[in-house]
Image (cartoon, rainbow, N blue to C red; front, side):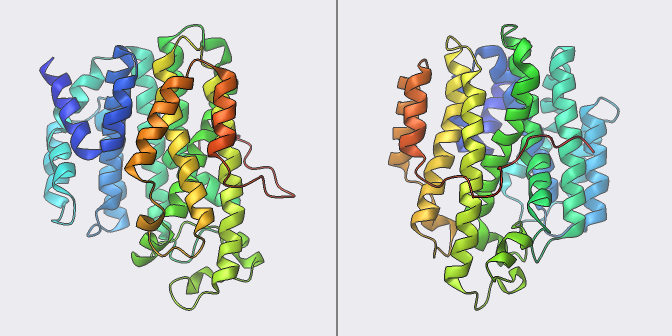
Length: 348
C-alpha cells in the first residue's frame, strides 16, 4: 500500500495531466498504467539529459531495460543514473530516478501478461529513442515514414501496451485486440504529431527538429533554416498538411475508443481526454499558423475543464462521441493524395 501511495505522489509531481486522467481508470488499471507511465518517464529522463552523449544514453537505456525485465539491480541503476543527471534535469524527475527500486518493485508484483506488456513497451521505447538521439536530427527527419517511425517508438508502442492491458482487464475486448492494436498505433502517432507541431519552435531552440523534410520541401521550406528567415506562408502550408494528417490519426483514435464497451466508462474517459485536448491543440495551431512558441497554442485551463466534462457526459454514447469529435475537430481534413498512416509499423 505504501508503494502505491508513493506511485501516486510521483505521478502528481512528474505529470499533472496523467495524474488527473489515470484516476479515471478502474483500480487495477490505475496501478499498471501509472506504473508504466513512470517507467517510460525514466526513459525520457535519460534521453532529455543534455549533458550526456548519445552512446552514454544508450548504455543507460539498455541497463534500465534490463532492470525492468528483472535482470539488473534497480538500486544500483538509480545510483548510476542519478550521478549522471545535471541540475538541468527537473527535481521531480531526479526524485523519480531515486525511487526506481520502489517503482520496479511494483512492476514485479503484476501478473505475467501485464509485466510482458510493460517490459516490451519499455524495451522498444528505450531502443528506439536511443536510435533517434544518435541521429540528432537538427534539420528534420527524412520523410513522413521516418516521422511515423519516430512517433511509433515514443507513443505508438504505448498504445499497443495499453491495448494489452485493457484486454487483460476486460476479456470482452480481447477478440478485438488485433484491430485495436493497429488503431492504437495511430492513436499514439496522432498525439505525438500534435506535440511535434506544438513544440516546433521550442525544439528549434534546442537545435532539434522532428518535422519531415520531404513535406516542407514540397512547400519550398528548407528545415535547415527553420530558425532564421523562414517564409511564413510556406511554412504554414507544411504545418497545415501535418495538422490534417494528425487529425486523421485522431479519427482512428476515436474508433479505438468506440471498440471499448460503453460500460468501461473509466477506460473510455481516460482515452477521450487525450483525444479531446489534442484536437483542440490542432485547432489552435491551424488558427495561428504564425505562432512562435508552444505557449501561444496551449489550450486554456477552461478548455481542459470543458473537455473533461464533455468526455464524462458523452463517454457512454457512441453517437454523442462522434458528434463531439466533429465539433472539436475542425482542425483539418485528410490531406489529398495520401492516407494518414496505416498503423503497420513493426517492432524493429
